[in-house]
Length: 213
Ligand code: TMP
Image 1 (cartoon, helix red, strand yellow):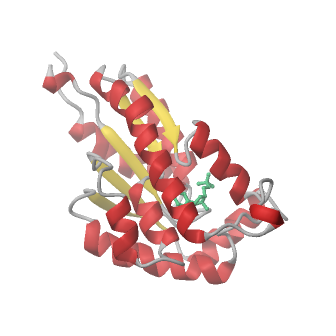
Image 2 (tube, rainbow, N blue to C red; image 1 turned 90 degrees about the horizontal axis):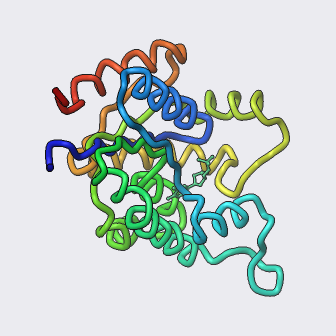
């Protein structure tokens, strides 16, 4: 049965790096190749993840209208992750379905360490099982910003300001170095044309698929 387990594939990168586009494209390619594949994302669509999304967009404000405590936010991201793994990711993998997840632990390490010690963020995420592969789409913060402005002008979520994104860019490089082995990180040049990036990813994923026949 173990060999029939699906692959757990994660996409990481700055806002505007193209993680959602590439994750969805991979699901399309997997299905076209006759594989069963599930697209998902974090924050998840579950109860904790839905709250987080409203908090990021400023549609849910803190106590007496104040801003959110960043430690609480880090714990919510970690809690959402464990709930997501238990209720969605793990059951699908066990059924032999591939799970492609837009963001995972590395996002918490890179983003939540803006305001929290990196070791603490790693500690609260230690029960999240590592993926089979993480594709890190490396894009400079300045390039990612231009893409975001072109895609949705005028909307800025909690972590999307340029100074924060520049720090997150450095954090990702640090975290790929420190956690790359555990999370099996493959660094991809996310500034290449979309099609080139998806070809590179597909070539890598195809090699990892279990033989079913
Ligand atoms: P996205 O749907 O555009 O990827 O938005 C999710 C935002 O939440 C994005 O700015 C990254 C941020 N985020 C964290 O700060 N920590 C996390 O653990 C995750 C999964 C996302």
